[in-house]
Length: 276
Ligand SMILES: [Zn+2]
Image 1 (tube, rainbow, N blue to C red):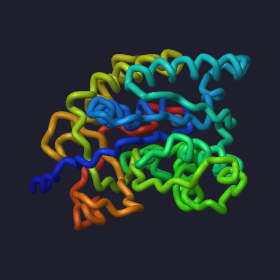
Image 2: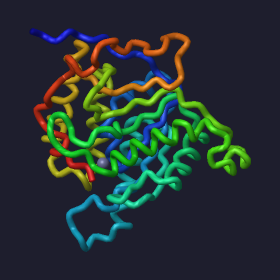
Image 3: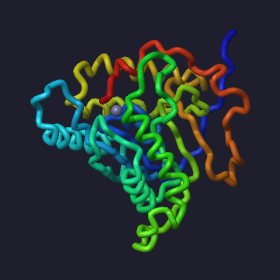
Image 4: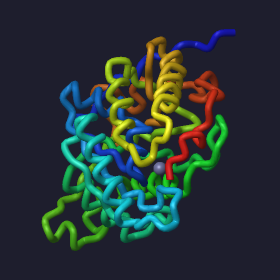
């Protein structure tokens, strides 16, 4: 029995913010969607909670030097995708905690940039459906982004000194959670997959076999694309926080079990692309 084909997800935020744990997460994640939205007129901002200072195999490597390298790589990749800017919050790589100081930093970012949608790693995924364990930093970053979006960013009495200093509360309308086990939205990225591949190649310190990586990225995009009948797609779990006038509460999201006929088992696990 062939799976029922879904419609592509077409809602586009005017302003969006991607919140990740490490430099390169955004490029393994929703880079092609970000590039497409930017091409169509959106403005995007990238926030990296850490600078990836533990992302190496040499215990004698200077972590600050590695952090500087990885920030430079991420800025180069972000320019390929087209983000308006990148913020680094300089939290410790490998020890990211969804604590109040991180939440305040993220609320500052959200209230400053004022995005309609925030994209973050799905914090509920501990084990990927296709194999592999989700990095603790990814889970912490996803949860921290969620908690900053709702309710802290919109609540003037959360971190009240921020509002008093002029950072007015801001309502984020949607969360787009990437690397989900139960996606409910697929975005056609056929026109921008090349930008994702090019952005990933900027992370020179992390990628030992760029050709194999590129082959995997293309294969995964093709697998997600088959769900909506296009050559390449990225999958998300979309959480609507604020209903849209044009789309209603769930927009194009399917009414039935979103996981029932999703892409299923992946032919390569995320752990192959260990992102530290
Ligand atoms: Zn990572």
